[in-house]
Length: 385
Picture 1 (cartoon, one colour):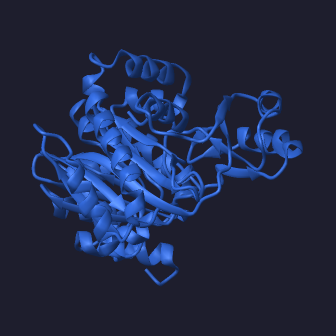
Picture 2 (cartoon, one colour):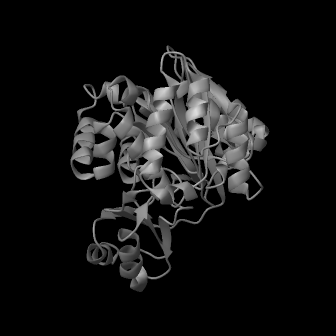
Picture 3 (cartoon, one colour):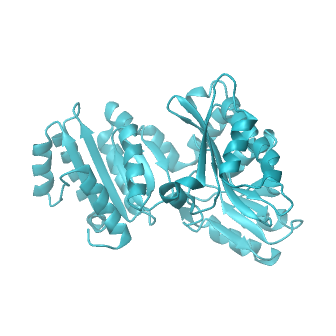
């Protein structure tokens, strides 16, 4: 479960990681009252469980207290990638000397710490093209993170030595949070370096392992509340759709998390990025493929941030002709959906029959997964697909 920003920052504060002064509000009038004692400029941030809010218009600056009500009202009237905005985090802006990146994560059987020379909304570009901008530290599960590992990474990133103690302290706290709260990801982006050398977490992305909720009752309560009040989350859970919101402009529907992550990396290497990844394995196994696929395609087609959709099924156990029939039925329900480019890759059991069905319905199926990925990338980049 991905925590909202204010929920994640509350956890950061529990572990002694400093964040800007802020307050959470639910309506515009409350925003004006709560911000009365704060020092502008203020950052007003939509609280939705996904990344890429800034690019989607979910983060605004209020230069004066007088405009807080109007900015808050505009954000509360929005939907960010299908999620209605029901809460806002209002924070005092801070003076930033440098924006960095820091994250601890579980990667398969490994526990890793990532430190980036750069941070901010364009951090994906550094991941894709500037490998020397990041240092990866492997954390020993028995002994934890050693200070010398962090210092070595900071030296390679050419971060000033007088700041090493502050960065090492935050890194240690991030790793302890990852382990202590059963998180699979603790990401601070940006981690702001202030002119006085202190650090502030300007954003928090914390993903908690839902299988560990029996040890984390506070997070279990958050999930129950979210399912009860958020229609999108509730429907995803009912259909057993595994939905991972990201920050790009290509929607990805796939079977198999491993294959999906590979496609996400492939999109990045081609110069694009995924807006969201949907894994339908559990949906298929529970016999909910038809409503699940229809719901996901509806959601992707209604999301203005998504400019193209990749649909990938590479399987031996599933009948691709049956999946093709379900796809055709779901796509034919709304003719407007044909206006959003779709790129299909169907490989495996009964692939020839599936391709024939798709072609008969007027859809082009890519010869390879690479063709589908590159076609979607060319589409969002404005080149002929």
